[in-house]
Amino acid sequence: MIETRDLTKTYGELYALNRLSLKLDKGDVYGFIGPNGAGKTTTMRILATLLNPTWGEATVCGYSIYNNAKEIRRVIGYMPDFFGVYDDMKVVEYLEFFAAAYRIKGPERKKKCDQVLDLVDLGYKRDALVTSLSRGMTQRLGLARVLLHEPQVLLLDEPASGLDPRARIEMRGLLKELRKMGKTILVSSHILPELADICNKIGIIERGKLLFDGDVTDAIRKVQQKVKFDVRVPPEQLTQAEQLIGKHACVDSVEQRAAEEFEELRKNTTDGCLRVTLKDGNTDGSFLAELLVQSGIRVKMLREEEIDLEDVFMGITKGITN
Ligand SMILES: Nc1ncnc2c1ncn2[C@@H]1O[C@H](COP(=O)(O)OP(=O)(O)OP(=O)(O)O)[C@@H](O)[C@H]1O
Ligand SMILES: [Mg+2]
Image (cartoon, rainbow, N blue to C red; front, top):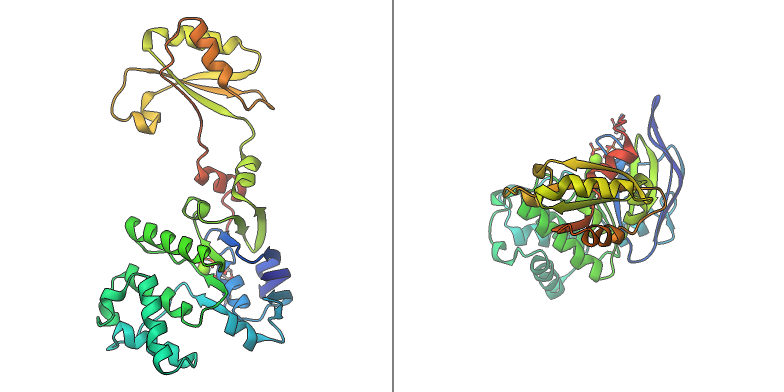
């Protein structure tokens, strides 16, 4: 549905995009993740036919950005990172204005406007002035606007930026809804955790280059070399447990951790906490439970470390920015 090959955009010496190649199949939700200045907006604007690349090829639904801009605009919904709303216009008038621009006529226009308002949960604001909407509502209205002509492909440039935590969750819910409708979505963000659970693919871009392209679990694997486990035992058995684990052939290292480092333990605990790192190639830590229980140690918790997606992102990008 979307394909770019060696897409490149230069501004003087600067490579805003450097031979970017990516591919989205029908129904893909592709998280396009990168720090400020990485080239996300540039990519979206090129795909939306609003900006010409310096070289390279890009197609949307098989249409070339060079020869079929008109067709592309018909099949995409592009939500820019910043967009204006007009004074003195009601929500419903705003949508009708754009519906008219898409040549949606008569009763169909009203029907479509009501439908998208419903979808983004703004029906109750249909008669409110657009300037009176909160940031989150404005974002949802912006999304409603690009859905009017039922595009198959959505290009959403940081739809959740500037939203409070609740509004972010609502925006994610909305994206899931669109995914269920079978839309192909390219959605950008600065932060990986925000998109991880709604996307089936992610691309990590930095300084115009795609550093990673694949699914989320592969990204994690790329960064996380060794598997780690957290173990909690009664404090009086901590040293014994540490020694036992340290001697096991599959264990690379074991260290004591302060209880505060365990998020769910902020509620104060006297438990002893250990972080166990397995040797390369070992992924199954169930032997730890057996080992400890056999020696009479009361295991209060055994859990594989959940990798922090923020770490994955930092690991892949290493903080280089344009
Ligand atoms: N018109 C322009 N003239 C010169 N440089 C530009 C222009 N537009 C973009 N750039 C540069 O191209 C690079 C990529 O910008 P782009 O807006 O695509 O990044 P982004 O990933 O969307 O960043 P952000 O997360 O801040 O939105 C940046 O270094 C930016 O300064
Ligand atoms: Mg941007």
